[in-house]
Length: 248
Image (cartoon, rainbow, N blue to C red; front, side, top):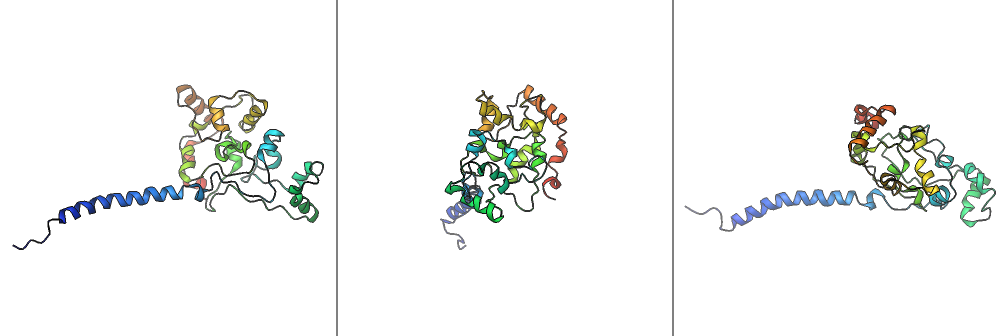
């Protein structure tokens, strides 16, 4: 009988099987690495603005409350960006001749709004409500990174769906009580008060201040506290993974 396959056919068969497993893995691994790289996500890349605004200077050095500029963060889906009028509250009196603030003065004179460059953006098919998160006591740094340290604002987290779901699936792991005497909404800003006062932070507070997306240590005491806070803050875990919550 004539031999149908040459002796090296076995080698080709083995190599093809190995390549059939390796190539899809490489495509998935390197493709995922590329799509999650800062070049695509924008994480850690400062965005140029019409006026170089420093959160570090305004929030930490001057102690201006976040809500002074982001006026609707507690009441609206959109946090809001500072209007010309808000900026001129101070800058009609100080730094009145600074070349850096020429776009602000021109905006004031002409009545043309400042076109700030949006740093944190979710896709059009995703609904995000700032007020819900603020009123449940979720600190700004959880999503925005170490915003109080930024001289030029940059994106702090990827906002990938898997990242959001990590908290939505187990919100108790991220519930933290900054000051039991205050409402969850007021507690959001306790971290910045402690930083400005130079007070000692707990390990978890330090991690949040540094912009790390961290779960609270999973011991019994923290777990019970997290479950208790979910109840007092009226967080319904069963609803948080419903597609409709974010995709309306």
